[in-house]
Each structure stands twice: as C-alpha cells, then as structure tokens.
Amino acid sequence: MTQKIIPVIMAGGKGTRLWPLSRATAPKQFIQFVGDRTLFQATLSRVSDTALYEAPVVITNEDFRFLVAEQARELGIALSGILLEPVARNTAPAVAAAAAFVGVRFGEEAVMQVLASDHEIVSDERYFDAIRVARDTAASGKLVTFGIAPAEPATGYGYIEIGKALPGGAAQVKRFVEKPSLPEAEKMLTSGGFVWNSGIFMFKAGQVLAELAQFAPDVEQAACAAFANATGDLDFTRLDADAFAKSPDISIDYAIMEKSSNVAVVPSAFTWSDMGSWDAVWKLGSRDEAGNVSSGNATLINTKNSLVMSRHGHLAVQGLDGVAVIASEDAVYVGRLDDSQNVGMLVKQLASAKATAALTETHPTAYRPWGGYTSILNGDRFQVKRLFVTPGKKLSLQKHHHRSEHWICVKGTAEVTIGDTVQTLRENESVYIPQGEVHRLANPGKILLEMIEVQTGSYLGEDDIIRIVDEFGRG
Image (tube, rainbow, N blue to C red; front, side):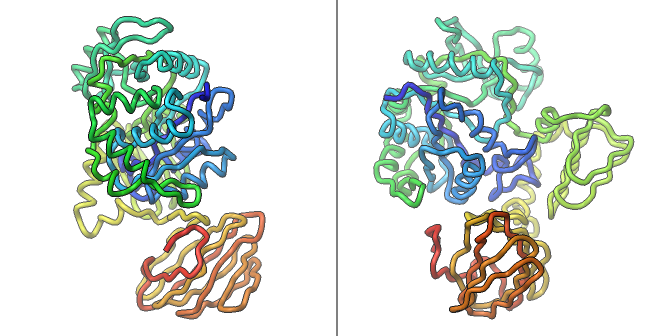
C-alpha cells in the first residue's frame, strides 16, 4: 500500500454563479480568472509534489472529459484515472465511486484527499502544514475536514464549531452550521471557535465506504456497483449508468460528515476561496490604487472598488463604485459586487426564457479533444468560426449533408483531406469542401493551428455531422 496521499479532484460541476464567463458546458473550473492557469490546473499543481502525492484521480462528467485530459496534458501532469459520471448525483456518490477506484488501485488503507477543482487556494507552508496534520489524523481512522479561519462574517459558506482538541493538531467537530444570516455569522465570528467549512476532506478509502454503508447504504451500493460494472474508454473509466443513477442525490456532508461521530476538523489559516461569486474574484485579484481589479480591454474613469473583465469588446466604465462588469463574447453582466452571490437567480431567469436559455448553456468558444472553435458570426444560411487545433491532433474524418465549408489558414500549417486527396495549407491559403464530401483537418506542425471556417448551407447545426473515423471514440 502506498504511503502517499491519493488526490481525488471533483471536476464535474456545472455551476453558473460566475456567469457570463461560466456556463453549463464551460464551467468555472476550466476558466482562467486569476493568473495564467485555470482553477482546475491550479488544483492539479497543488497536488503535483510526488514526494507527498500519488498521481491524482479526477471524477468528472462526459461533457468535460477531454477538457480534463487536455488541461492536465498542458501541465505535463499524469493522472491515475479519470472517472466519468453518467448522471449528476452530487458529491457523496462521486466520492464513493472514487473511493472504490482508489481501494482497488492503491488499497483500502490508502488515504485520499477529496478536493474541489474550482477553489482558489494559496498553497504556502500553512497549507501544507494543514495537509500533513490531516493526513496523519485520517491515517489514525478519522474522517477529516478542513476548517478555514474566517476573515469576515461571510453568509455564503457553511461553518463548523470546533470541539475538543485531538492529538496532532486536529480537533473534534462539535457541530456543522448551515449558511447563516449576517447576524448569526457576526455572532459566530465574535464568539470564536467557528471556522468556514471548506469542502476539502481526507480519509481512508475503505473507511469512507464503510461509513457510507452505515449512514447512506443506497449511495454506497449504487456507487460501488457503478464502479464494479464500469467500462474502459481510451484513458477514461465510464461508471455504469444504470447503477449510478440509482444513488440518491446527496452531498458527502449530509450523507456522513454530519452524521458520523468519527469526524475531525483541521483548523487552517491558509488563504481559501470557493470562487462562488464575482465578489470572491475581486477579493483575490490584484487591485489598483482605487481598489479596482480589471482584465482584458477595459478603461476605468472615476471608478473604484470594482471588478471589470472583458473577453471581447472594450469596456469603458465611468463613475461607479463596488460593481462587477463582466463581458464575454456574447453577453454582459452588470451588478453590485455585494449582490453577486445572487447571480444564480438571474441565470435561472435567463434559462427559463426561450430567447435567452442558450446564453446559460453554451459558450461561443467550445473545446474539443483536438482543440476547439469560437463562433464569430451567425447569419441566414451562413456561419463563421475560428478553429484552433492542438499540435499533433486531428479532427474526425467526417462529412455534412446540409452544408459546404471554406477553410482559410491564418496561423500554422494544416493538413487537409478531401475525398482521396491530402494537401497542405500554409498561412493565407484556403480550400473549399463541397457539401457531402468526406474531409478531415489535422495539425502536423509544432504550433497551434488557427483556421477561419465559413459554413454555408440550409442547416448549420452541430448535429449535421457523420463521423467516419474518429480517434477519440465519438460516434
């Protein structure tokens, strides 16, 4: 059995509280907010010390499988496995399935650390001190959670009341507290003895399954059956859909952490945020002398304590205080920072209207295992996209029934297959693919390939595609 910690990264969430940048099909964990890495990549980096950790296990859903693999590849970080959830069932069944995987791969006594892929954490010595305390406490048989020293009376987090001290630096959990009102949060902050519930856990693989079998047997049975009947697909492990769907939709907190008497907390002083609101992004950003955080194309005049981010056009903000102005390629959000916890309510309203529902689901930029594309312009019977293809990757051999395509190479070198002919396109060269013709695009070079694709035809939907050969196993 390994003596190292097995990181289990939860990367399947489809949260939209950071709309319009975060969408259901392009959630916040795969987006760059602070620094030059996505939140998921920053999480991978925190568990990259091979003296302390084994290669991580990632559990995600079908839609994000290639994003996970590609973002890990960009960092050169190997993964122990990628488990695919067939349906969303909250964190308890996800943890149970991961524990079953870890138990088989590393042994039931192996200590696993469960961590979210969308938290921002400063991984300094205080952080790793807490990790070592938690590891030793978990190895002794406890279910361990991390409690963050509260910096303010936040109402967006749950709290933990610290109980009796345990040997080694951890403490018993006296009780869990749901997200409080502001007066309740202020009272807890004043009285002391309370920490934020971080949603980071550590326990032995076999032990967490045993606790689930006691307190949430339906979860344990469904998840273990889903893993036992899982199938391999390239580098992915597909959990059995029928078995996994039988699990209750319940969090690991409700399933066992709040019920077991065997729970410990490690009070921690490291910097942590669940990045659950634009206010959290502003607090973690690098502020100028007026208290503003900005990125992208933005001009701020007589504005203070604000967050301004643009991924497309130029934002000019004048005479405002304490606001968030966020522009994606196709939508703009403007609201008060102190009200940004409620963006989810706005997204629900957008999702309920036919005219705006797509703005909550899809993003103009879509990622694929070979790279991705950005929708630039849509019109009647035509569409313009920017394609980007990773070095060494290729699209499926395919054809379309209802559209023809024009490809223009703007960066890199393209290998284009049309019927039985293979040709090379260099910058500023173009090619035409007739409707119904079998074709393929590949990047044989060492730099990113960028193409402009102009589609014309009677139907331009993404489902008008017949894949003949696909190295990624897609139908």
